[in-house]
Image 1 (cartoon, rainbow, N blue to C red):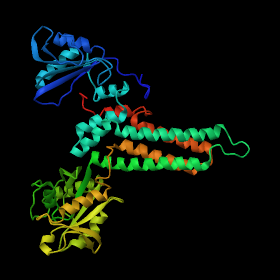
Image 2: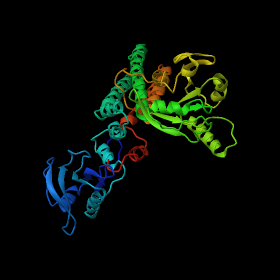
Image 3: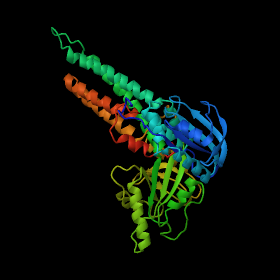
Image 4: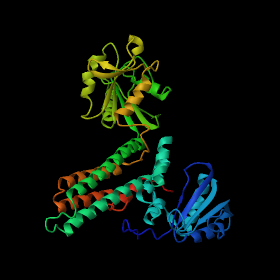
Length: 453
């Protein structure tokens, strides 16, 4: 039973293809559980030594050859899952690997659920929850910066920072509970309020730093979703092509050319950028164009940032209508395109309605400065230290910790209430690495993994 969750690791044997679907030079079938040795003997006819590659023929039940490859055996608990694990390294044909997996199932294994190998590693204490999530983050990382951040979490970077906070919380709780258990005698405060406030302030400072790092890491993991919004013929599609460095969108002088949202994945300073070009906003009787405009509004609703694209001669006149399309609180940048035509300034400048960016989609003037400003506006700060790759649940947990610490500080003279807020803060913090878990969290986390991991 896992001490963190109270859940039992799986008692049966699981198997899955651990490599990506499609043809390749090498493909791997992974088996984990108490019957892994028997599966190895049944398929390869060998008792492979632990941690030593063994060449063998993989056979069907009636003795026909499936393939010839390598067998790797890892004995419990010295394996990824903490159980006996066998890996069959074969040639990477889809049909071939399906035959090997079917043979494993015939020998008593069952098909692994998504993420079940890593879930067993967590339940058996081989990884904490952050490290388990970082396995999926490494696979899904879209940039080199994200890969490095995920690798740091796999090595325990975020877990260590969380543990330091947890230790500080425990020490503060001990002081507060000592004050409750041993009340003042003869007017002497055994735990002065000044000491409690000092310790609380140190904790809040460390928490604030971690939250800033985590916010950066969340942006790095999820990417920045940016939507281009404007009237027809202001150059939204040209801007998309300029950012992408290639012709992604059709560019024409005919209004309404863009009928659907076009998405392009880019990278700016190591941050994934999901740029969405949309149909121009205008009144139209064209049914298809109207559908495109409705999709524009949906794209705006899912964006992290909006670029409001305007262009002369009606540039400023269009701005109030575009601003009215934005949800409250959505960050936006006014982008005045076609500076190459009117001779105006490229880059940041003062506009009649406030700050704006002058750019030219045709020449590229101002585009690099705009890219930098987009990241700054959403809080990205390059070169500010090690980034903590963070998920939404990590940010939510850290926010709840901050809320409980603030509430506790307001009740510091009422020690019982202060102690309860500290307990709730520690409980929220424990969710990050899996020390405390809501019952349905594991299924939600590991259900998003690929089958073979």
